[in-house]
Length: 69
Image (cartoon, rainbow, N blue to C red; front, top):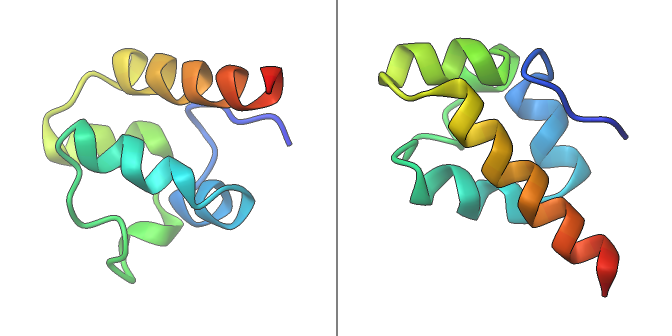
């Protein structure tokens, strides 16, 4: 699956639950909230006052490290 800033939170978490840890480290502590699962990564970052590019980069780094194992 290709994750972009338009990927919904629900899609990302269904793909890899480890992404939740990355999101929480970035300050998004409501990743399990039912209303957040339909928001894109970009929308969720905007709601939380986070830099979507920085959060996206951390998710990509996590996925790349996982794929390298």
